[in-house]
Length: 254
Image 1 (spheres, rainbow, N blue to C red):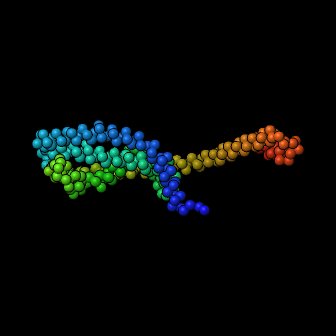
Image 2: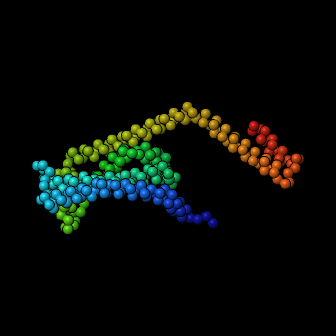
Image 3: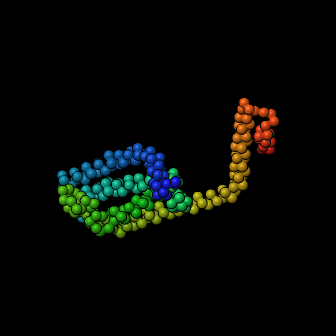
């Protein structure tokens, strides 16, 4: 009795998780640790000192504090960037490049788009998309992720910000990031398809000949092993019809 289809897919997904995801845990842990200890924690420390010890000075003549800018650039943007890098590892290095299940679900072209966007095009494209979701707009969440709590004033509306998260300049920067990342990815996809077709057109015939020769060599090797096994068999007889047939096939291949 064949197992149900959903159980078969579940078992396959579980196997791919242990084969593809688990080995990348050390890489993810190293990247997260580097970002947290070298960027996020130092920025939080400096912002806290400015907010609680130096009366939260403003950035120039604006109505936005220096501590808010440090939290925005050194903490919140770094969190979004790190999540984007983790997403790249998951979607490209794990699914698009190694998972046959992903290719069966989305098809070869979508997989190729993900593969061609690997690197900075993927990062800036989805970094900007994530910023639109979590850091852009005039709402309280875009200005302060922890706006709902009152224990840490540095993370709520008591830390002033004015016209940053919904500014035209910020919007233009995000749109440029999306355009550049998407355009470079599409350019890579177009070039790879063009060169792939040219390669098939020019070298397809020769590749078929090479593959045919490889199959021929495999068949010859198998026949040689069969003949050797027959000769070493105790019941070997010089008039064995089976052996004669194998020898004839071997001579034909040679």
